[in-house]
Image (tube, rainbow, N blue to C red; front, side, top):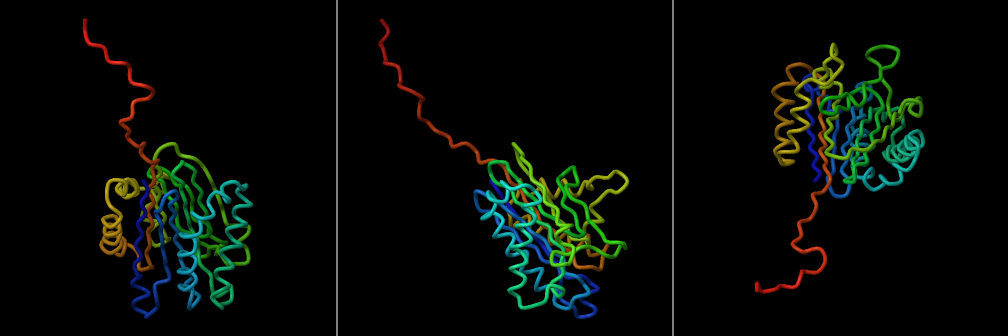
Length: 256
């Protein structure tokens, strides 16, 4: 069983100056592989939201298709392949790569337990009780690295692994991430566990509504930036129940 849910909210600061929402998130949950992606366009680039939207939509669809090939590669080689294919998508926008600056977070999980994630820039990738990937800033706290930036090949991080049971992850942009990270304890806040595991027991529609509510009623009060969250939950398929008896039935004998 696999589910995904995403939500995006335009930040107050963007509303006040008439700027578009530059965050984007997307997810797919069709067997045998589910994927989520989240991008945050650079505020200094006027149309970076177009790049964020294009990259997110592409990654959520392409990662399941390319999963087996990517997982068979070394992590550095998988990063190279993701960067090559993603840049080709951005180049199709007829914008310069400098105009396409955005962060990139993605996670894909196969129903057989294999998973793969990719991350460049700020934002977080959380498991219920663990930070899987931290933000990476530049020389200054308000700087970060971008998918189409000049140093992307050095900073796009790819990890892969295997879970024998269920996998639950939450991707966040920087607008939400700092509120969900317990810095003194170096672990996700309790809200992360609640959101991650909640998807396993609710429908995708219910989860989307819950994420949208939290962005509006909780996170919007803590940050005036654009806000985005993406959830993935995946567990091995349940074994099919069969009434067939293994082997031949013993011959029936009447009691003597």
